[in-house]
Image 1 (cartoon, rainbow, N blue to C red):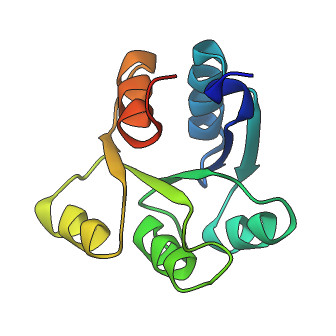
Image 2 (cartoon, rainbow, N blue to C red; image 1 turned 180 degrees about the vertical axis):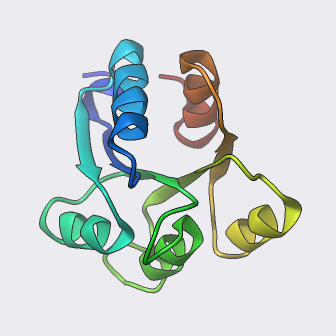
Length: 128
């Protein structure tokens, strides 16, 4: 069984259209074990019930930013080792520095295509 067949990914974005586009790209790469959450709190509840290897999260969400979600993941024993990719339209240096300080594995600037997503994932997981 290949890595992309085993890899479990949680996509977190408050915009259903964005979640759909990310899922479409992941599926075209060959990744099928995909969970969805519309917020950081929902992501934490989902991970408590169904663990994932990697979280792909938008930065700009109400209630909890992507960085806040990353902080929660790293602060919990059961989720601290999960890979984390931040997606942002405002990739300013302060956001990226905060992410790096909390153990962000990679980031992706919006807009992006399937190939950029695949390269970003492979930088974290290895060749898919």
